[in-house]
Amino acid sequence: MGFVSISRVAFAALVLAVLASCARRSAGTDTDAPAPSPAPSSSSSSNAPTAAPVLSAVGERDVSVVDASAEPATMPNAPPDMLLVPGGPFTMGADTGGEADEHPAHTVSLDAFFLDKTEVTNEAYAACVADKKCHQNDREIASRNHAGPDVGFQKPKQPVVGVSWSDGVAFCTYMGKRLPREAEFEKAARGTEGRRYPWGNDAPTPERAVFARDFGRDTTDEVGTHPAGRGPYGHDDLGGNVWEWQEDEYDPVAYTRAGAPQGRPGSCPEILATLRELRAKGSQGFTGSNPIPNECEHVLRGGAFNYFGTGLRGTNRVHHPGRFRLVMSGFRCAKSASASSESNARDK
View 1 (cartoon, rainbow, N blue to C red):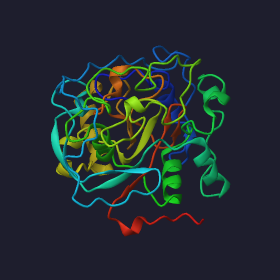
View 2 (cartoon, rainbow, N blue to C red):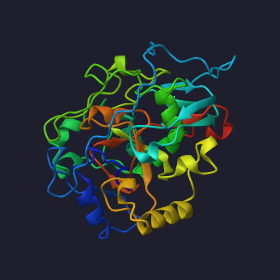
View 3 (tube, helix red, strand yellow):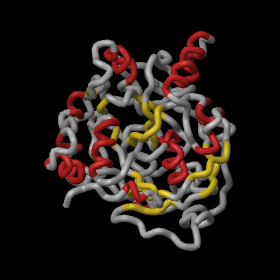
View 4 (cartoon, one colour):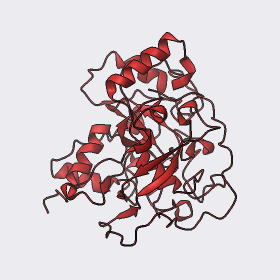
């Protein structure tokens, strides 16, 4: 669904071209998004979203330490390369600032879950491809998107890009995991104290995150190389580097639905009805600068290497059709802490 309410810079190079090409794609086929212009702030084939205002401050106390306020007395052991996010309530969304779909602030209660410490890397994804459990990611996505040489995104420890939502599902299933829910990602990024960014309330800096880089010249960093930007439970790169696919379909009014206390969006038919209502009311700005979509899309969270700094806030919501493969989109996996059904399915 493009970008929500006020609009967003990171996908400026993609959006109109993406939407214009949707009619030429079959709904069930993963596709590469059309090439954006070199700079994220302008494009001959897309609207250029403007930067969203910064959320109001949520306090200036030190939030650099791990948030352990909701930890159970006995914590499950985390699988390799994953970290526990304790169960319990947290505040999702905001009452002011940001985009309209980030409102209102509301309490969500989640079960404990594990989340990958880093974004999935090229080398990890390649192993799934070699085992014939994953489709090959688009290794020419950078040149297709005019994002610079493809080799700039292909180091083993860089986050995999050029992957669709279903590619992320396949990889996480291969690993005995799943994609995170949108509410889970936000809790991992904000903790129980309502951080503005994963590391706290201070503005993004190059030491904390990969952002605001020159699209067409710069690229992503290897995962886990910005420890100063770790989230409240120790996860790396929850803000910046690449956008991350989420399990949920994007629901612009999810925070006012009956499932909001559990972080559950509406069903696809409910979402489509909302979109029709928004169109009927002429509420063009509610879902961003793009035309209000006609399909259910999937959420992406976290921001990317070419995205503006204030857009890395933990409440920010972005969305695209799940079939799109983008140069600034990857993923990480989650696993329920108590679900025996999520045992590792990988045949080692």
